[in-house]
Image 1 (cartoon, rainbow, N blue to C red):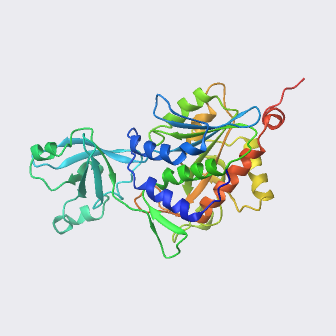
Image 2 (tube, one colour):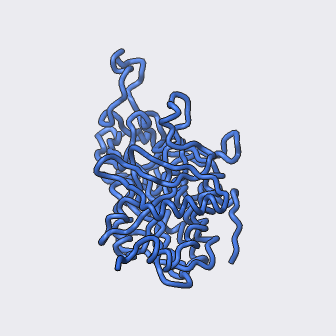
Image 3 (cartoon, rainbow, N blue to C red):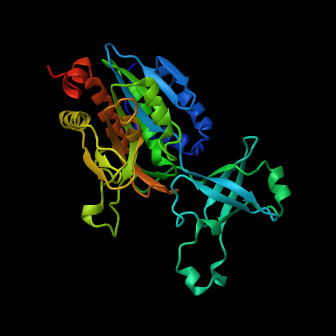
Length: 369
């Protein structure tokens, strides 16, 4: 089955996935969307005990490649309902307190419905001058759902432990190839994996596409899935920082929007993160050059991906990553360029087809006589 890579399909799928709330630990709805999207393109499909969705596309020879893209997003969890019906919360994943005030939110009730709310703050007119100069601490924020008592809130199905996300839709900007929305981290990676799965044909190895859970709170799904699958190599598909905006020095921009997917060299800080396996890094670079796919090299000083968990599973699994340049990560208005996504699909599909048992045994690892 041959499927062309189409930007309209990428936009459609990004909109569908990003507008389906899936905070860490609560990925069931997006998982069902993905099952319907990919079931006709795979040989096996299952959900493991952690909640990862695993899709196997059988190859023609020996060897296993694991492609990981996390389907969870950062969110908020309700910790208290006061007597006037205002909700207190804690972050699920890495929020900046600067982002949250005055945002609209979607709260999932215990029966699966949605309640709209807003993150409220003290009116600036009655703030002290020193308060206006500071970032509002998370503990001073609250969610207003328009009720007047805790009983009303509970009747709506909200309780301690209810989960919420920022309300945001996926839209095109002035350049129709540039889109904005919530949770591109990492649903754009999920889109890349899905579109690769659709176009991949005649692979020499079994390809396991794993849509992982709880990446934003500790890379948990990737760790357990990698242990179960025990692949020869792992490749994470995630976003990376495009800091190509006013105020950022040239040397600190990491990567740039629209200049191609990034091939990971290293990420994280001392004691954490990934140094990409040289053979995987070099394979991705060689494929990009051979296929004339624009690419960037990525050294990210903070943050990491599922590849870090894959790499240290079992006795060690060689791992690398392909990253989609993204502006304003961990905000409701993240931005990506559809051309970068399209080229990431091409790069990943072509790279998987280059992997065979000979490459695994002679390039990736070698026995010394």
